[in-house]
Length: 156
Image (cartoon, rainbow, N blue to C red; front, side):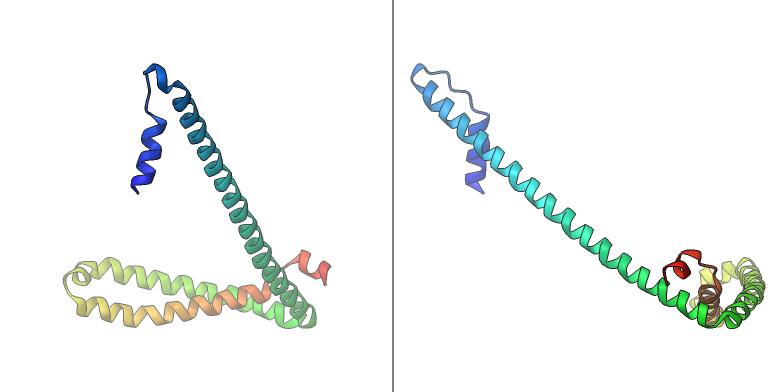
């Protein structure tokens, strides 16, 4: 750590004695070289990070393309079921809307009790939480199975 302080101090030191001009110039040139080396190391590090991020993007997009292709193949193999999934998704969406209306009504009516006591809050979470999570999962699955994808079927 003290070596770094010495290097930094030598960068900002001004020598005014007549015998030190050569030394000061040499010291300044040395500190310039060190700065250039540090900047080169930073560029190399940033290039490596960019390369790694590009690899990650390629990996994730390849997995996403694979899933989309498999989903498109499933839809092509099961067109009637895909249409039924669409109808079911629309129906369950209405159920979800009604469920959310009931849940928000309950929140608005008893939020003060939920803030005051853990029992009311825990009861609310136990009553609405699992159903909401499962309902969202079912709706998401049905929506994915029924969504229209033009690019995946053309790739298959």
